[in-house]
Length: 199
Image (cartoon, rainbow, N blue to C red; front, side, top):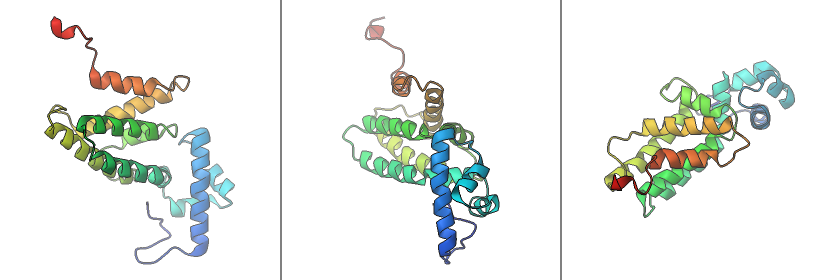
């Protein structure tokens, strides 16, 4: 989990600081779900019953708050990647994990865009999400490539950007909940029909 600036290594957070931290996280989850990740930080602080200075002491910027909010989903994604590393069909395991990643990236409006824009920026607080996800995906990709079911020139960086792009596209079409799945299938299977090999 992203470390609060009110906490130093080896020293636990004070009880009142922990309560503020937990309230801020809870209100941020609610606000991000209702208004997207560009929700007002001032409103989040007010709803948590603290001042904006307290919010910034715990979360120095918006990305730090987003990273903390996303940690629970991150844990679930990493756990699922370990489970899928034993899948009988390595390519199927990779595709399933990418679909799960798209679903989670679409939970909060604006998250996919933020993950995409910071995917190669290790100075961003969101690298706490991006780096472990990229490493987990790389292991699944390497296994699928070793099985010969995925091309050797496919990179995990490209796949991560692809999943964020699909999540972002789906975010723009909330009336079509199946769009993300269709786009992922289309992208991974290509446009060839059953008679393409005959040509």
